[in-house]
Length: 393
Image (cartoon, rainbow, N blue to C red; front, side):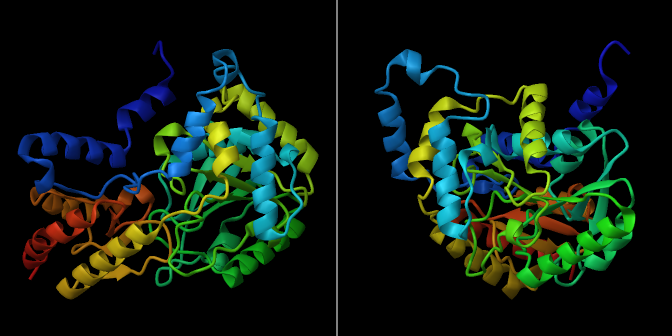
């Protein structure tokens, strides 16, 4: 084969989420957008704050050669200083700009981390259900993706299962809280128990195990507090994106934080920079680095998501659907009405309901409904959900 087979395989397999979204777009053109209930993509329906527009306008006043020029590979010092100062205010820490590497969104942040940490043959544990691209990024870094199911009832981390899955090859555990696709927020008690497991296994095996906290939904919660993971486990790296908090998914801006409490801090900072260089993820979009410097403390508007959450859970609850009450993010994890989630999805699709079947998240028997859509979409979809339920009665 004259091309890279692994790359070909990833391209041929595609993302089920994006495949469903593409189908939804085509179907809307065919029958009208108001007749298609597309819950596939985690694409925020809330506009970016006015402060974002104001920041872009200020940037456009800069001389063009300054506005569009390269920034340092790790990002503008002012932007990294602003992020560090914000984290320090919120979590009582003492981070500096040298602890941060600005990236092209969470995908780049996580890819950089996996390449910074993993050697060929290493293993990275993910808590299922999990965002499916984790597997792609982990395998691309030469490691094996090891799935560990969350607790089947609470969807908190099953720490006994994590302990059983750790081997001498385990390099890292990835956690995502609030979680995509379930909406769970891992409790402080749950995370402390995980930290105890990791420390015990490190000591028993004589290895270092890193905890990668993927946190693009940190600001989107409904009353629950999201614990700050570096305060619980020293060997933590945090990945973040402004795609959800500032409704900027298409602008690809985020960061990697290596807290100075991490025992390998200095080596990790260089490894993160080296992985960014290796992958070509240097110099994140310059205008949006400046936006972050200006808008780092801009509050997230979750009111519309909270309203949608109530409308969706109450509507489906009245129809008899089972689901996990989401504590954060903007997804509802709904039990499929038959064991085969893909077969259930096909019945959804026939009614122009487009959730995402759970197999792609490493967990059978559920669907993910993204409620970051218009309120009208949720309300208008209820008759179709009722028709679907009637097919199983």
